[in-house]
Length: 301
Image 1 (cartoon, one colour):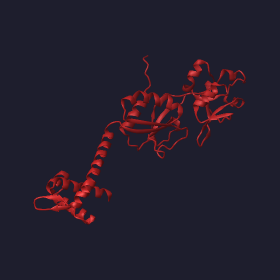
Image 2 (image 1 turned 90 degrees about the vertical axis):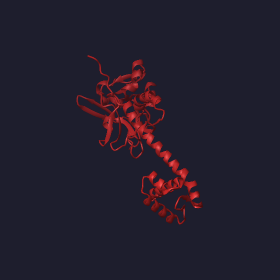
Image 3 (image 1 turned 120 degrees about the horizontal axis):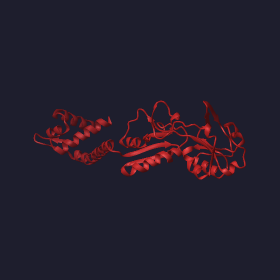
């Protein structure tokens, strides 16, 4: 009913502006008889005459003038907003919300955003760091970033980074006071710094060697919901950390951390951007997907 009311009011404004059913009908692309019937129906519904009709002209009544002053600016506002929405459809603009893990946001999302956003001032991006497997549809995210193995089959997944290896690391001073660590089972004799996942408890450390897979749920004195604090605690010598290799590479290069169990940490599928297959992509979202898409560097042989 609301849509019909708007159509009838728009027809009334056209007749009042043109002061002619013939001219207004041509402007609206309808027949003169259909437009006359629309006006009679609107007047009957409101219970008041809006137009004075003579053989030569049509003019608003006092009630019609009052309605015209109220309705015309609002219809113009609607037309302006619809035009703006149409423009958004054709140019990259609007807000894109993404849920991501901390390392993916820092290592993959931010470098891409810093590169492209200066060229697209009308695109706004919200990144929410969350280690839970968030339902992006329910929570109204445009997309999420997770490891490839964690993405549901009904989602479109776009690879945005290379393969990743996890790394078990600790400070040199820590290892000076502890027995050597050769296999994952010996983690029980070491202090561990854990990542706590929302609604999933402590993150299981995953290992594989010669086709043999192990998932070790380690306990320790410290547990955080952020990998930045895990890294700080490991550098400070509070225990072992299990973090993406990329995140600890600077500390490994400087000697602040030492790596163990490297042969138990093979590479696996890296970060992917995922979103619902039924999603209607906006130009802004398409720009971000293209900027994030992983393109391996080809080396000349």
